[in-house]
Length: 114
Image (cartoon, rainbow, N blue to C red; front, side, top):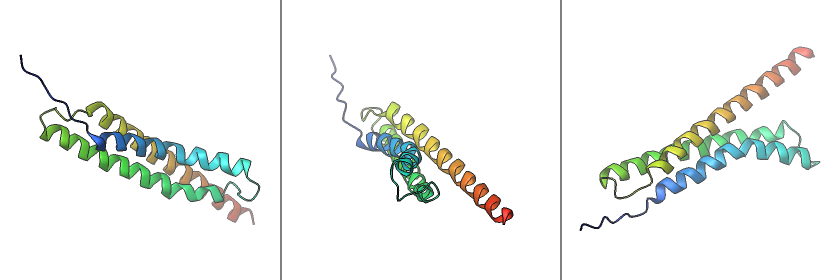
């Protein structure tokens, strides 16, 4: 009977964490803007680069996790977590880009109004 040793793939776990942070960065900034008197909604747009950075980090970590999975012939595990990290990273980048477009259109409308 052959025992198969499965080691942990920490990059996959970090990819999921970075992806979750990427997805939650913009909603968290909006909630912070609503709950704090000193921060307005346009100031919350500074969370866009934070979300993009976390999203890119999730993609890079997931790529490294998939490479480790292939290199170890599946013994490293974490294939599903790496996939989840990619999905969350892409979702976080998409949310950040849509917020950046919304802020840009809002600023353009303010400029055209005056």
